[in-house]
Structures are given as structure tokens and as C-alpha cells.
Image (cartoon, rainbow, N blue to C red; front, side, top):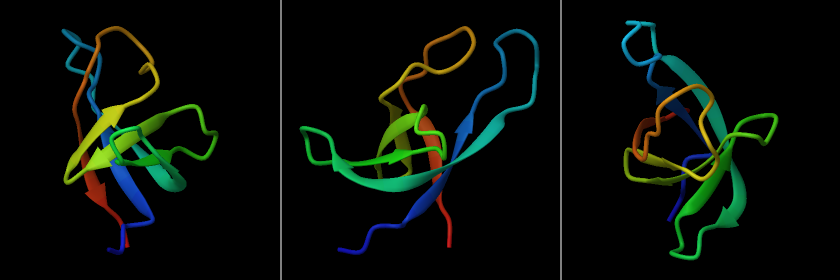
Length: 77
């Protein structure tokens, strides 16, 4: 199965501040989680996610307050 090489992952704005969301582009790393989900990372490699369908599960802590376990991911051409 061909996996998209990159995704746009939407990070929510700061809770209670009505800040705009941030979009981070992540690229396929060639790694997989123990469960077999592909791992994607940003250019710096500091933000890593496992993507299944349209859901990105963070493998590293998100910047700022709050803890999000499921983020929206959109495949990019």
C-alpha cells in the first residue's frame, strides 16, 4: 500500500485564548510504531506523530499547555 509521503497536521491554538491553529507539515520517516503505524516527523525531527487514516497521534510532547492525543492530519501531494 502506498502511504502519503507527507501530511499537514493541525495543532490547536492555546486553550482559552482563541488563538489560531498552527499547521505543521510532517514527512514519512520510514519508522513504524510497535503497532505498525507509520511515523512522521517535522523537518527538525522534534515533532513526531503516528498517522492512521486522518488522525495523528503525537509521539512527542506538543509545545504549550494542554495535552492532545488526536490531531487532524491531511495527506499532501
